[in-house]
Length: 171
Image (cartoon, rainbow, N blue to C red; front, top):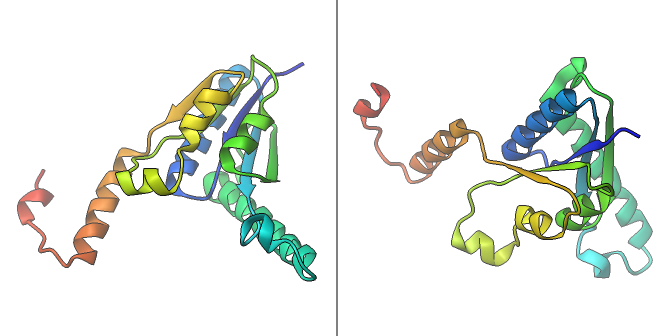
């Protein structure tokens, strides 16, 4: 039985960085690559109740599958990752979906571990921490690309309309 490399994606730049790392690990190990995108219906379980619940869930699942396809296409294009790949859109929280996807101690779980400010930590629990605490296999946390910090800084500068210091360009 071949072991798997399981990676979570959301379409964010951090998750695409983790996806590339997971594909590299799968190639080195000769493993299958499982790409998991977790989704939840609008309003959680309450939103799926009522007469329109089934239609709402079907639309949410369809949107999740399309987001997964877009993430894979953005990451690999037509060439693919160079390993056997399976994509899964799973209705669950991200941490639970990823831990459920790994079932062998020899599997590898790859998650992005982006920078998280104090407000974000309060509002949304860390998927990486959840996976580290609950996964039955090794977990590889991938930091965001160093370029992402620079992009975020430029974005903040533009939002706050801060002047550009030309000395920064010379570095």
